[in-house]
Amino acid sequence: MCCTSYRIHSIYVLRLFNDPVAMALLYAALVFFVRCRWLVGCVLYSLAVSVKMNILLFAPALFVALLSTQGLFKTFLLITTCGLIQVGLGLPFLLSHPVSYLKGAFDLGRIFLFEWTVNWRFLPEEVFVDRRFHLALLALHLVAIACFLPKWIKYLKLTPWNTNKGKVLVMFPDQILLPLFTCNFLGMVFSRSLHYQFYVWYYHSLPYLLWSTNLAPITKLFLWGLIELSWNTFPSTNWSSCLLHCSHLLLMVNLWRHWPREPSIPIKTKGA
Image (cartoon, rainbow, N blue to C red):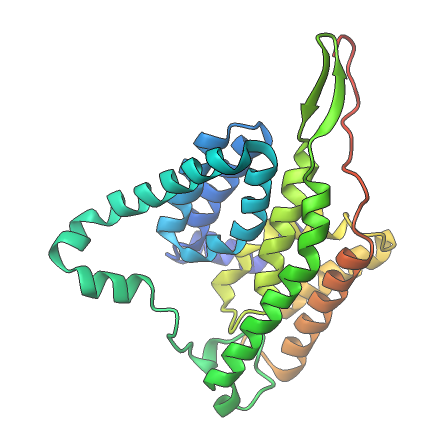
C-alpha cells in the first residue's frame, strides 16, 4: 500500500500542492538527523518549514532530541540558524510589505472550508468554524504532547555502545524517528481540519508507527486499511470521518500504553 495508494498518487502526480515538496525536505532532514548531522538537518528542516508550516508539528520532539544530543547552548545556536534562514528567505517580502507578509505567513486563525474537511464531517458547520472548538483542540493537542513528553525524554537518552575504539554514547535511528513521527501524528489527530492533500503529512510514517505498537500484524494491516479507506472516501462522509478518528485514537492510545522501553538496537556487523 506504500506504493499503490490512489490518494497519494493523486496528490503527487495530478495536483500542484506544496505538501509533497515540504515533506520531501523534511524526510531529507531526517536522513541527516539519524546520521547525527544536526546542522545540515536543521537547515533542511527550516527549508521545509519555509514551504509549509505543518512541518512545525515535528518541532516539540525535535527540540527534545536536540537538547538530548547537543545540549542547551548548541541547541540555541541550531534554532537560531533555523530562524535566520526564515528571515533570509522572507527578506524581500519583509523589506517591501512586512505587515502583509507576516499576516499572510502566520495567519493561524484562518478558517478552513467545511466542504473540504476529511476529519470533522460529522460536526455541524457552526461548530466546525467555532473559535472555542479550535481552542479546545489546541488544548487537547498540548495535553497529548505533555503525556508523551516524559516518554520522549527517556527514550531520547544517549545509549552506551561498544565499538572497536571503545565505548561511546550514540543515538540510534529509532530514538529519533519514533518520537518525531509520533509528535507529527498527534498534530494530525487534533487538527482543526484535514484536507485531502494533508494525507502526505503522515502517510509514509504510518507503517512505521503501526509496527511500533504491540498490535497483532493482522490488526495493524486492518487499521492501516481503515485509515486508507477514510482518506479515499470523496467527498468525506459522517462515517468516514468517524472511522478516521477511531483509527487515530486506537493508534495513539496504543503508542502511549506500549511505548518501547528502549530503542531497537542495530545488529552489529563484523568489525563494528
